[in-house]
Length: 430
Image (cartoon, rainbow, N blue to C red; front, top):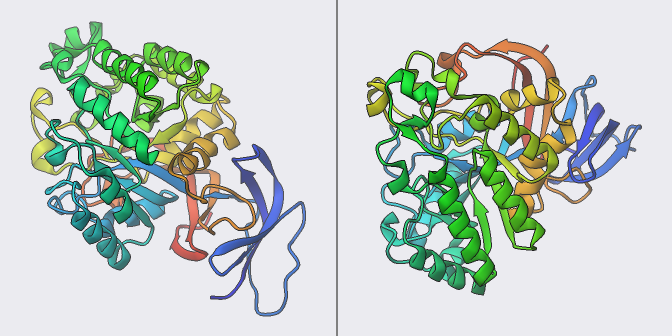
């Protein structure tokens, strides 16, 4: 592999919070040097890439995406999902464990690693199941799963209902300093709800999901995290009450973090419109005030990471009456341009956004990626943040087409995605 010098770039270092002109030298799959305001010293035989002022930043790390394998290849595969990820600037994916069979056995992790090596063009890391069979009754063998390659534990789209099982899981996880990522939604409080509870749901004649379905489980988990000292991550929060719970827990020194879906940052319940099933997600889209609260919490740093919540669904499960359709939306390919809306509106600085999409997820997982510094993996993106485009779901690389951003006008096109110093995706120029 030739050394690569990327020059005349607008460097974004999410760890230092720095943004300025500069150049980067890549060697043997890693960042060899970073030169702020100058070109790196190179010798003959170095491939030179003129970034022409484009943004050069660490590749994104998505902590929550459903990749289909094993058992749901009709929705997504490691190959198609990684192609969509690379097009969206995502260089590392943490795949959900709620597959068929679920990722609750080291043999399944071994299968995923081998399939990812052969089919995926980005890094794929497994989140293992928190409970056997995702049944919420018996915790999995954390030690064996970690040894096999698991990076975290959760039950995917299911929140762990039983507090005694969660307490045992946290005590067990503490022995390995393992990260628990729970989907904070109480199924009993959700009941038959299909969208955010409130006036809009009433006007649509749809049963609502109260915010308490999220906050009650979150507060329970935070109390257990306080009692056990375990590392805990709320996979996605969506309301201001949850923000306050997380803020207080952090102020008290608990080892807790949280994420937010790109959907909760950029869409609200009004986007459901005339029963658009592509906007039926979990947690549900909340009010505009709650969306703004999520943006403010992200800018403040209370919310740690942004996730795509990539959840491809087939036509049969989405072409249904709203109440009967499946939860889930595509997100991995449109996450970055959708997130850039917040930068363009002045709500958040670009380095802070990139930190939530790369550096902070890497820190939670103990990865050396997500940084623009010598020695870090050369997982990078070249981004034109001002390039406009209209989302066409038929051109998305995912197997499914259930994008809530279909026909949306966005800005921000990934021109090149590097994984290990190798260009795995090259988009349109301009």
